[in-house]
Image 1: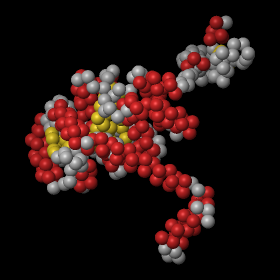
Image 2: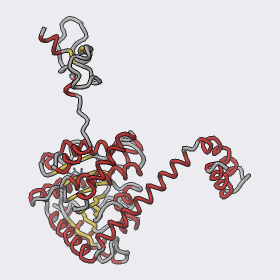
Image 3: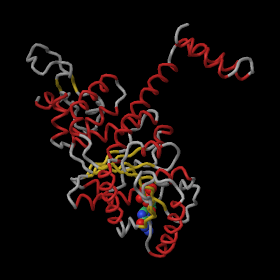
Image 4: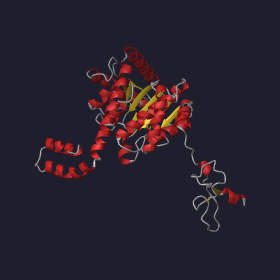
Length: 379
Ligand code: GDP
């Protein structure tokens, strides 16, 4: 009898204070108990109404984050990452209230090809920073997950020590949507982490395509992690990525590889000398470290601190953050307008023919745009 009682519960749509007003009860189904066949054991705990997560109010979210409650922080980030309009609305209300508590951190972007040692480096640096009393949040911006649903960055075995550290918080990349969507989610996650008292944010990305530019646009300091002998092209040696960097750190400077790493550093310094620095008033240089042994990792951090001091004193730090916010607004407006255009029913209907006309040389590209915009505007 008592067992039978335990396997029955009120469905979640019944208000908690309804008393006996509803007589409906639910019984454990075949997945939660067993399917009635002989010789079967119950293996799972029956799902019951108490395990349904209670909706939190905006103020509960806000207080939870401010009180540095990691569970509530995670739930707030999940709201930020959701594409459901109701969640997005709630998330924006929470963010609005938390905004005054954001911004007091240093945001560091870390990029490098797979295998460069990013997670080993972040693990080592993160643990050192936690020991010094910092609170470290690690976020990932993984462009691969938006395209293939696979992930270059997000496997769970990484950063084992850091993930157990109570002063650290690790959040994998948001896994769906466009890179623009991932950007919004990552930026807003940065703000939530700051409100929860994390004063060092390490934002990791992988050296493929657009993601470095994206991460550069949301961080104060951008660090390019390199290894020797991996092929310059592969490592973003194409001027572009190097020009984004505030430091080039050659990792795995240990054992037999140490000498090679030191030589690579000299080479990079020579190249950097001819490039425009990524940050006004700061000279980007090459460094070496070993993320495995930890040698040189603290020097890298001292450099980040020095960067912070210099750019804060000159006003560059604040200016960059303001510029980043404004260009973020602008890019979101662009995305919004683009989505309106692309999803407009008349545009959807007429675009293929107009595109065909361009391909066949019947109309010019400019004329095609004019026609499409007129359709969009309802002329
Ligand atoms: P990620 O793909 O950039 O995150 O690279 P990982 O941190 O996963 O490192 C890739 C491999 O390089 C792993 O086998 C690490 O143990 C190794 N590794 C990382 N840093 C160092 C280092 O400083 N020295 C040496 N010798 N190996 C390292």
